[in-house]
Length: 236
Length: 152
Image 1 (cartoon, rainbow over the protein chains, first blue to last red):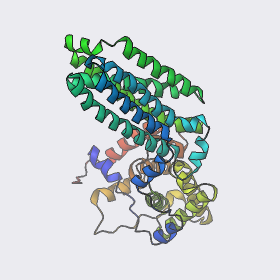
Image 2: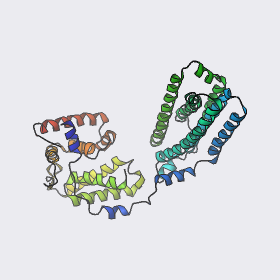
Image 3: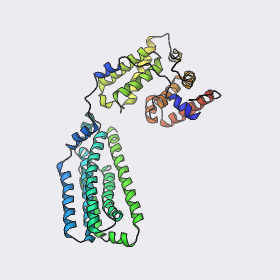
Image 4: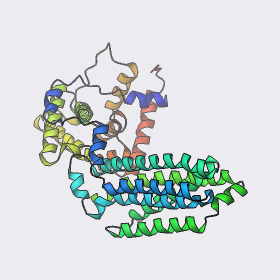
């Protein structure tokens, strides 16, 4: 009965088909824009240097894998916090230049714009990680799970902390704070450069894989909160 | 929610209030025009509570202009016996006996499927009050429908 009542309530007060709807709405309709076209329009607003940095990280990783020892895999993971840094700083650009209100008054809401930019930058980083992972696995001869943990942990950690901080800091401070976080995580990779060896020796890969998954989930959660809070703060 | 969906939901809301398709459509269009007089099409989803408030005020104006009918004495809905569902008819009959505000709450929450926050904003209540009243009304609806056999 419970479900019947709730389901039935969706059916009550069914009016006849409106007669003048299409003619009336025709005066307000805007030209259709597909999701792909929308993403392309937003890609144009992302600064080239953020893409160039990803290319730079890839080139540096190629150099490392070609010229250094397999145990220097920490160098590759030390580069990835900077990919996360570019993503977060690029997302907070409109806030830094106080452009949120202007963007919100345009055709799309700030939330849609941030989501589109986050998708594009996230896809860029995903491609970078997808290219780096097999390359590093072949070079270092480490298991895929270990390499995944070594590469993803610093990236996700930087993303989580930077997204968290960018919700608290306003203006240009965000860049400096996030750069500090990226540099710290990168230095942490150097400081804990024995981590792949420890991961292998302690055979505690499952634990680290769990931590990586938690960081990944936190990163997605923080991304969602970032987008939601941004709009609420403006209206408040 | 696109413009068309918004129009349909608002039209249904106005129909619930007026029970007259032509009047409901006129009020829906007037609501749109008044909203778009001060805001943009893109703001519609964000300010959905404002849109419903305009529609409700226009429905009240409609009844004020026609003093012979009050909001609680609206004509019963036109029922197409071929298409009408047993449960739907029963529910509409039970809903008719509810106070105007309770009927509106249930309509917004279940028929137009608005989140509690938006319903609270439209009716000027707290979220807690909406939850509490929703629970009470559903309990009352179930007790009134109790004993009838539905195969919905």
